[in-house]
Image 1: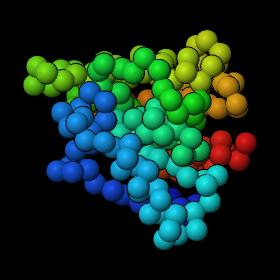
Image 2: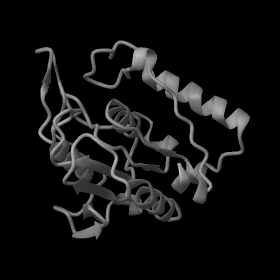
Image 3: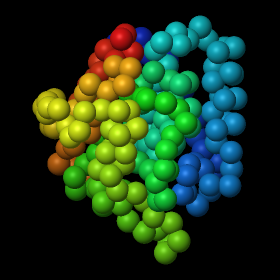
Length: 199
């Protein structure tokens, strides 16, 4: 949390019902998480003077998948998304109503809980392929084909799609670990979010 304090970020950490989120493709998908997001943002606005130009969404594991869901269906409500170790579940959406978004996704190449290629869950549900999802976002955002460049931040190797529509940016940052949040992730993600939100 020190990085969030240094950047002056108020952290709101909702927990899904019974520890799960009803993003597309999940076992709990019958709940209306879009209505929840709308109510949550309205409640936050009543309680704190949040700068709408610095309103970001993140999450880890299934929370990361929920951040992808928010980017797809409530993309205009946030200026940046930086999920970790959780992406779309199948079926991937054909399109998103949230418009172009700034998205930085972080994932471990040795993750076996949410593998890069996805995996079946109880023979009924299926985690999606992370790289396929990133390529979806690059197309959704109207980015140049293929990552334009690669940057290294500590143990993170970040592939960058830019320029994209409206000055947006898509990043896929990989590390060699498993299902975890890398120690240098928070500072990297917050610095990125501040930069893209200032455009």
